[in-house]
Length: 187
Image (cartoon, rainbow, N blue to C red):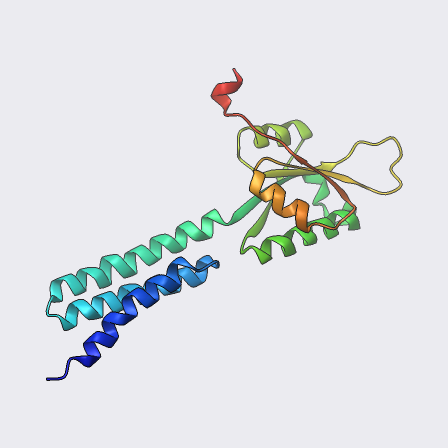
């Protein structure tokens, strides 16, 4: 019997694995992980290890893909804290809406979602940043003359700060990086 088809199937394992580790998009990596698990299960089945093939298909592919999908989806969220009255539709400043749209477009390029989290006061907003409930804050600057509304965006994650600093062209905000120490180190 000619076993050349087996060599072709086995050759898919390192090819798929190589594609998997070079992926930038985490969602494409999830799909490739599923393909890798399916190919491994097929190789195990063809070689006569049905129990290993079934385990690989159920645990190595289906369960791990589900868990990875949940982890990827939850880890690619940037939580931006804002003052509650900034979100009220009738009072919303066009500069603020444009700034939020700019943030969303930047994060979409990096496969991230922006979640806007409202807080009642500046103090609770600041406390949420310190306690690491949010990744960044965007609050109005308190200036003497307010012809044009400007905002201050404070970011506690260095990598996100670098991304926004290099890609944001909006003059409506002043960016600041704030290195937040662990709560235990502050006392």
